[in-house]
Length: 107
Figure: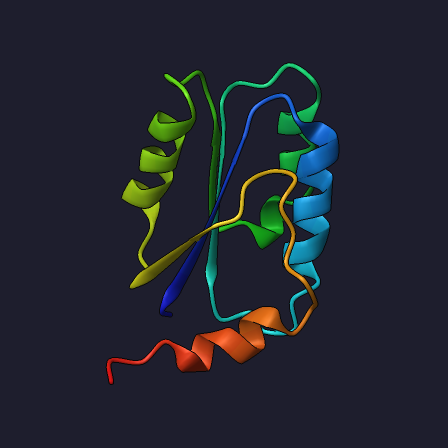
């Protein structure tokens, strides 16, 4: 596994839903997905729990802001590369990771 997808979220349940739909629709499954939630109170945590079978690691706890959350995600990442796909972001098409991952070479 060469790619870690890191999603951070705070009280953006609607945006997180779009990101979840985008990630789980990927035709390639050879990546890990890390979701860091900043202790949301808008139902985001419950949404994450609904999709936890697709998520390699997740947590929902207070943090010190966006960069602290990103650093938490990087610390959990095992991939050689990290893609930050934050809540509200989505991949253009279901084949994006299938097309991109083979291009991540050491050449």
